[in-house]
Each structure stands twice: as structure tokens, then as C-alpha cells.
Length: 465
Image (tube, rainbow, N blue to C red; front, side):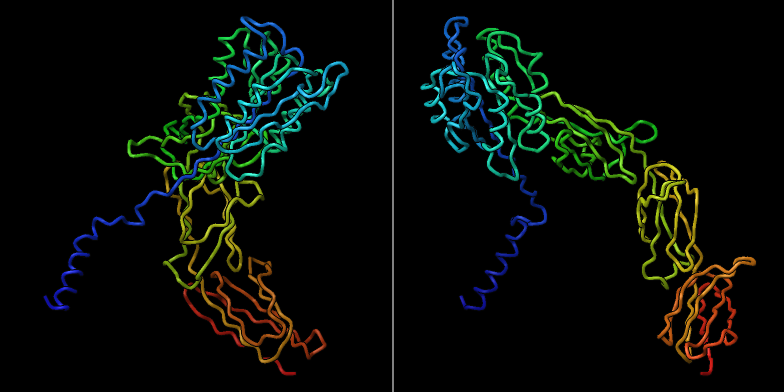
């Protein structure tokens, strides 16, 4: 076979095989899951020697936690750490700084945590607030991490600290999510509900169950859908960005473009159930819903009223004289700018009444424009004309619109420019001008003219020195 035929055969083979090649444009974007980091804060104070059910509290708590750690050894995308308090110095005397990060965060370190747990000897006091406060240094910087604290304790704060205030600070500063607390032996709910999500373990079975629930919630996201309701209460609105904020820290947690899926219903999103959210839907104007809580493992429907219509801004006769013309859109009666919309680019707004300020020369004010559900409201302004002003000398002057018996300022002519062009709305105008070289007001001259739609007017201003 000649080289030419071999080349043709190879090309034909590539063409035949090309439909089987992956199309870059059709590949789904890779979604990087966040790294989950669990910090166990473990009570090794003197009271953990107390008898509980079948054994000492320290033995039961340690063995059940070790069992959980064993099951997490091969869990992907997970890092763990261990902070202990009350284990370094004997009580009395009371030492309220007795806490240490025994095992820092790292991959595949469950064995290290287990080894430390096996060697713990309860000794000291219960500085819970201080231990939680120190935990902020345990989480190394990370842009895509879920930081979770699991506090296991058989007592309450003994060092006059404020665990509730420390927990709020950790959440507000974005260090960690709302902590989990497992109380051993008796019910500490009233003391810890302000700290985080509390689980009472009055016996061994409840302790094991609480640990399982906490770990399950820590490792799993849950599902939700956002229903953007029209004026009839149906979830038909879509294709708008939604931002989920952490209610406590104010940090952005998720951004999703709202989607109606192929079944015709709002698409499901997977989000972290451990966070209380504030939701902002970026309609014009935006709508929001605060303090959204999710039930782990349960699908949650979040509904907001978001009825919208379309505003279409046009220039008469589809005029192309103005390349880009803008309009300030405000809620009726408000001076706050809601949007700056370009003519020729329709935009969606929440149903309601709006005021428009068209940034033409001169400006056009259109009030009480009604936007209705699923309806396009068209606002058309007249086709403009063009004014070309030519001056024989530099000087001072302004352009005015005649409005009845009143002159309304439109524009100040450039002092040192002999020719300028303007796109003007139809109407009657005047230019008032004086040469900069003539120092008496009697040399002021006045030019009256009319601008008609689609017409170019050349206006010459001559004045001797």
C-alpha cells in the first residue's frame, strides 16, 4: 500500500471513530466534595473515674469511642483530631488551663487517637470553655472544609468560663459549626443547649446511639429543594442564583442556579444539615428567608414567593443611533437603584410597580410601570435625532430643552472644543453661547432649533472675536 493510501486510510479511521470520542463541552464539571474534619474534645477529668452502668465512665466512653474510630479508619475525605482536658494535672488544686491537642488533624490517624485514649488517666478539673476556645487553633486553614466539634463530657463547666459564648464565637468566626455535645451519666441539657446540639447519654446504649447519630450527621449531607412560587402559588419560577449563608457566621456556604429538572419540578440540592441557613434568591429585587434548619436525612422543601415578569426597553423604529442606552430601574417611590438595564436587553423583575429613569439626553422619567406575572411589559421611547454643533470660536455655552415657558438644562458645551455631537430626544431646544474672548454679556447669542426623530441637524454658531 502506498504512503498516500495509508494516509487516507488513517484519516478515514479517525473520522469514523470521532463520534465515540468524549466531547469536552458535554462533560459534567467535577464537583469537589469538602473535607470533613472532626475534633473530638474528650473529658478526662477526675470525675470520669466514677462508676457508670457496667464500669467506670472513662472505660465505657473510651471503648465506645474507639469502636467508632475503628469504623472510620477507611472513610474517605475525613480527618480527625483529639483534644483532651483534665488529664495533665491532679485536682486539687484546680487547674483551669489543663487541656491539650493530643493528636492533630491528619489522614489515617485513627490509630494514633485510639492509642492516646487507651493511655488516658483522669486527674483534674473540667475547663470546658477554655478547651473549646483553644480548639480554634486546632483547625489548620482550609478553603473547603467542614469543621465539626464533638464534646464528650460527664460534667459541666468548673472554671467560671462561658462555653455558650465561646461556641457562639467559634461559629460566628467560621471556625467550626455548631458543636455536638454528648453528656454522660445525667442530663445536662439546660447547661449545653446554648453550646450546641445536645445528646443525653444516661446509659451505655444511649451513649453508643448518640455517637452513631452524631457521626452519621457529621459525614452525610441531606437534600432540599427550593420552590420559587408564582402568584398562583405554583413553583414555576427558575433560572436565578440562590445563595445560602451561614446564619451565625454570615459566610457564603453555597451558590446554586435554580433549575427545573427533567421531571418538571425544582431540582434537588445536597447541602450540609448541620448549618442554619439564611437564603437569598437574587431576583430583582432579591427575596430572602432566614433561619432555615434542615432535618438530617430528611428531604426539606423551602418555599419563597418569587413571582416575576419581564421589562423590555425599546427605542422607536428599532433605532440604531444609540449604541448603548441605559435606564435606572427603581421600586416606585424609592430613590434606591435596583438595576441599570440596557435597552434591547429584556430583564426579569419581581411583580410590582417601578419607576424608570432613562439616561438619555435629556433624561426621561417614566413612573408607575407595572410588572405582572409571566407578562412582558414593553416601554418604548421616541426615536432620537442627532445634533452636530460647530463653533467658530471657543467659548461658554449650554444646551437647554424648552418645556412650556421653562428652559431645562441638558448639557454644558465643552469650552475648548469647536465641534460636538449629541443624540437628543425629539423636542425644541436652545443653545446659549458667548465667546471666551468677548468680555461683555451683550455678546451672548441664542440659537433655537428643533430635533426631529431620525433627523441629523447641523447647527453652526458663529461669533467674531
